Length: 183
Image (cartoon, one colour):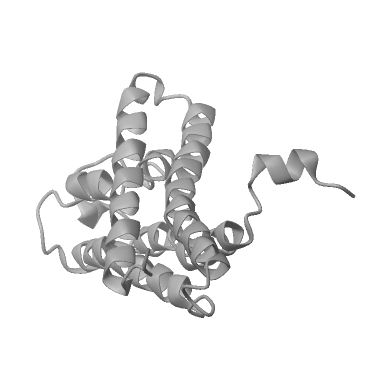
């Protein structure tokens, strides 16, 4: 067993991020029948945040568990400091790109109908956009500061990846340790 290279961990985290956005989009579209009720959309936004961030957490958690096993078997001397923070910053930068495009589309009207694919790409933000009243196809009708609000939804990615790695490395979510630990 070897330490996974940085690019593989980045691709894994990116894959989980895409999966989180797809699952959030599916949840939002499935509940679009009752999208007129604001409390339902607020609850849906909280649930999409939970799904998205739990998948990002899982990617880092699994690597933390792997690093812990390698440390116990004396295959490595210690974890690489800040690796998952850097991966989280890169993933945040990648997820900010659609919001930057949305901002420029709001200001300059670059694309026609970009808001529809934007909500599909950034599925976690879809319920927030509906609650904020952004349900039209043209971004030029939307206030420009909404792009920054949508971008802020992803700002916790570096923190979640770092915490996920630490939880996995220290084995904090092991049910056997939690239930049978002597105090």
